[in-house]
Structures are given as structure tokens and as C-alpha cells.
Image (cartoon, rainbow, N blue to C red):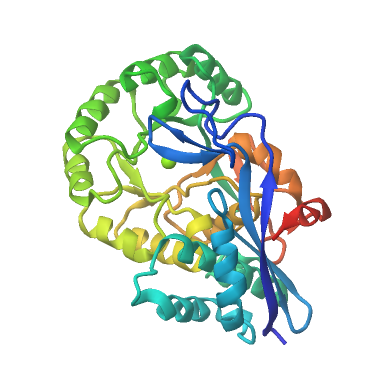
Amino acid sequence: MSKVKNLEAFVLTIPRDEPYLGGQHPGEGANDKGYFVRQQNRTVYPIMDRTVVLRLETESGVVGWGETYGLVAPQAVLALINEFMADFVVGRDVFDASVVHEDLYNMMRFRGYNGGYYMDALAAIDIALWDAAGRCANLPIAKLLGGRRRDEIPAYISGLPKPTLTERAEFAHSWQEKGFNSFKFAAPMAVDSLAEEMDGLRSVLGPTAKIASDMHWNRSAGEAITEITEMEPHGLWFAEAPVPTEDVNGLAEIARKVKTPIAVGEEWRTVYDAQMRINARAVHIIQPEMGHTGITQFMRMGLAAQAAHLRIIPHATIGSGIFLAASLQASAALEGIVCHEFQHSIFCRNTGLISEGITCENGHYQIDEGPGLGITPTEELISQLSK
Ligand code: MG
């Protein structure tokens, strides 16, 4: 009775006053569909939050929830799931989540669909299968993944969405007063010199604060080595995404030449993305993003990192809280986890849409002990789902 009866994906749109990462710079006006390109990282953003939510039901009536990225053209993911993938999941056992994952991956791998939107769609299905399995077994997902190692995970404050360095430092300090002492600033939103940004933050946050820099993939290896070296006297925790994702050799060169740990991984879909960087000794900290990986690939990446004695600090992005809950469950089962990203600008607003909530207080996430993901979408969230 743990076989899948049906599943369906929907779009969830959540308006926001200011775009993610803060207001637009001059010349970055949104088009009529609400998209704009941030010039400093050349990346497109919508002016609203948007995500894809998936509902799955078993023959015995157990419901599992999944979620994946929906920021840009979410209808592409809906079409993949609702018009194609769902039919190959119906009738499968929710306790075979990893097997279903491999089967769906194999169905498209030889055509080169081993990343991008196809894997996002698969991530949503995968999370819902694991959630349903946990609910069928009346166990939290961490227990199905090999064991619950921890009840809470240290969290770092991500993004300081204020227009000036003084305001960014004050904003970070306000979180320090709430018990958080780890931070990451986004280079596109920083002053021109990253060393100057570090210096300004350090002078307000003091010597014990951990401060990381997200460099948003737009340096050459040589530029990144110079900038990271300049930040190091100010105490740099880790340097994230210094070069374009394709430049694995450049990343390895940076990892050899600076003292600071290099962190990457938010854009990866599978363990193959992780393995090539691990083999090249190009990364010290991996940052899997549950919204792209699903639980199956997140765990495979995490175990590959552990086997190479690397650290894991999961990424956290724009969502309703469903894939964040999945990320916390998987993180509870992995030994190599040292911290988890905390997106205050999303979390504090959007997670009112899930019942039982997710708590992140005094510098730590608390991990739910309920069955499955431990959380459920509220009626308010469900009423906002659309096709
Ligand atoms: Mg990042």
C-alpha cells in the first residue's frame, strides 16, 4: 500500500517588496514578465519569489510533499513532471526512492539531460517519495538515511541586503545580538574592494565572527587568487564560487594557492558534479542545494565529500520551506556537516506557509523529529498553488 497512486506539480508565487539580494541598481529595471539581470553577476532574477511544489499520494492515502526551483520559467518543470515523469512514478513503491531516481535519470541521460531543469524536476519527485516513505514508516527521513546524528545544526546568516557597508555591518550585528556569529556577504552587493568590505564587517562584528565571501562565479582564477589573498588578513572563513562553474582547473589552482577554504556546489545536480571537483582537489567545502539535488543525490554528494575528508555546508535558496526541511533531514544524517546556510530574507517570511514551522534561533536550526520531512504545507500555501 506504499505504492504511488498519483502526483502533480504546481507553481507557488510569493510576492516580495524587494528582489532577492536587495534592490536593483540603475539600469536593472525588470521586464514585463518581472525578470531583470544583475549586471555584477550577469544572472537573471525575478522580482517575486517562485517555487515548484509537488504533491504525491500513495494508494493508502499517505501524502508526501516535494519542492524544487521555480525561479525562472517554472512551467518548464511542471511540463516535465506532469506530462511525462509522473506516469513513470505511479505504481512505484515510495520505499524505492533511490531506485526510482536512478531509473528516471537513466531514461534521459544518453540525450544529455543529466542536469538543469530535468534534474530539478527529479529532485521534487525524490523529496516527495522520501517524505511519503517517512510518513508510511512513521519515522523522520534522517532515520531512513542511516540515522539521526544531531538535533540541531549551526546556521550562518547569508546575504546582507543593505545599500551601504555601514548598514550591512549594522544589519549583521543585529543578528549577532540574536546569537548568530557566522556570516556571508555577496560580492555583487559589496563595495568595489572585497578586502574593504571584509575590513568594514570585521571591525563591527569583532574577532570571533566567521565571515565568508560569495564571489558569484565571475572572476578569473588569477583575479580570485589576488582578491582572496587580500581578504585573508581580515580573517576569511571561506571563499565561495570564485570562478565560473566550468573552470574546474582554475578552481583547483585557486585551492592550491590560497590559505582560505574554497566552497562550491550550489549549482550541482548530481554526485558526478561533485566527484570531478573532489578528484581535482578543487574544493574544501561542498555546498549541495536540496532544491536541485533531491535527497538521493544530496546524500551521495555528502558521502563522497565525507570519504574525501571534506566539509559540507549546505546551500539554502528561495523556497517555501519544503526543500529546506529536506535539507535539514539529510544534514541530520551526515557526519561531515559543519554548518547550514540561513536565508533570513526568505525564511522569516515564507516559512509561515508550512505548519509546525522550522525553527532557527540562537545560531542554530532545530531539526524536526516528526515523520517524513516533519513539516506540512498549510492550507494557505495549498490555496496559492497554481498550474
Ligand atoms: Mg552562492
